[in-house]
Length: 154
Image (cartoon, rainbow, N blue to C red; front, side, top):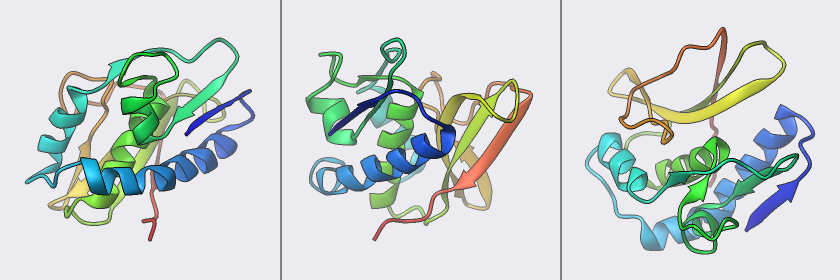
């Protein structure tokens, strides 16, 4: 499903990311293999995604099946950081790495984040899985970063 709406707030965006993760779980069950490590998952998803900005004035959040198969941009895997974070969170829900996945919101001030990425606490270390980067475990510097744990969806 594609959620296309005017930007309201970060709280509204986070609520809709959670809805899009739930929307994609059945697809992940059927189409995403189980991986040995989160890094393997990162590279599998990285090969299937391309960064494309949202349309001007619109907050576009695509579920995993929409991002990969029925894309708003008509580019399989085409989406911005909240779309790729939604995809990563969906896939992490179906893996056997533990249940401590999270997102980080980052920006130049506390009220208006400009970037979001997903990750997981894996083997007692924080592992960033930002699909807008070329490699896993890279985090760009921002003055304000907030880590929010993602409650598993049952």
